[in-house]
Amino acid sequence: SQDSIFEFVTNGTQYSDIFDQADKFKRLTITVSIDNIGKRFELERHGSSWSQVEENIQRFIKLKKTAANLNVGVCITVNIQNVLYLPEIIDWLNIQNFDYYYFNILNEPSFLSINQLTPTAKELVLTTLQSNKNYLKLDYVISCVNKSETSDGKKFCQYMKEKDLIRNENFADTHSEIANAMGYKL
Image (cartoon, rainbow, N blue to C red; front, side, top):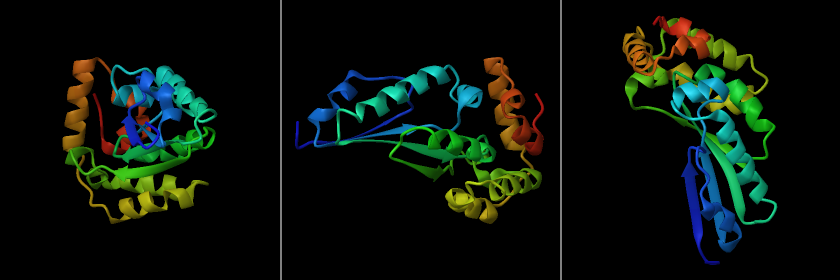
């Protein structure tokens, strides 16, 4: 009803008919959880289609033309798999028509946390993020990486190897730079 305020959080893989009624809400916010783009998204969200997600996002954004009460944004959960690629994600976000985006730093499971970067991976991430034109937008993430601990990367690599073997995929095919820096080999 007109006095209702709702927030939907979605991974973008589905489009519900409720969104077509956006103008019936006092305020409606759609937050799409996107941790990566393209093939990296598909590996991280096994079974998902990036083109389908992009299509749904365009439908969300198109709704804003008819529903002034609608805000559409993105939550990026920062973890080992995506931290190096944040500049590319931001570049993609900047050409969309989102109202906002924000970073959520993953803590659990701990083996995916940026606190488990190897020293080599941490150095690569910091160099990449600090030299990017989106440096100021990444300031919070850079600060978190700077403060992060490091690890030998073994738990992360073991987890990725188990997933790859089950799914018949290879993390290093889509995430080669961070895979190498973490010491990942299938």
